[in-house]
Length: 223
Image (cartoon, rainbow, N blue to C red; front, side, top):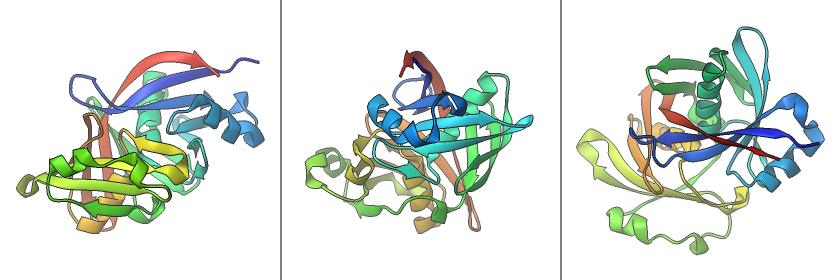
């Protein structure tokens, strides 16, 4: 049976360009045992399977083409935005890692998380954006690697790329979980431009990190 997959792009710029595609599927449409293969066949860096529960809440599982994740950034931000567009805004989104607090601020959607919920990344700080641009996915054959450089350290702005062969992702366009991890590592909120031009923002308050950005809809596909 054909399964409808809603598609959004998460962490766009202010004009709605760039962003990381996310597949959104109703949980009841795909058996749990089949979700990993379904996500691999879709080929998005992440696909979520969502169940709407009570008003103001929902739950989801998250899959890359190669593995299930307990938490990830662009799926939780994008799904929360999509749920509001569907008339089901959420204050709490439950994923395997935890119950996430969600807030909406105009066109931006924000998820509150802790760094330890995100996958581990190897961070490679380089001197400038030219070195970021020169990074090649072929250099990384395992693990999760985040290459970054300050563009304006005083104003907490940086440029980055992420390579995650272990997740089945040669290069990720916008990686919220890595932004959360790096924010925790540096102890400061960040303004990140990643990939071709996606935009992510974080804030930090004690051990809590908020991750936010803009999302837009793309055409649905059939899986």
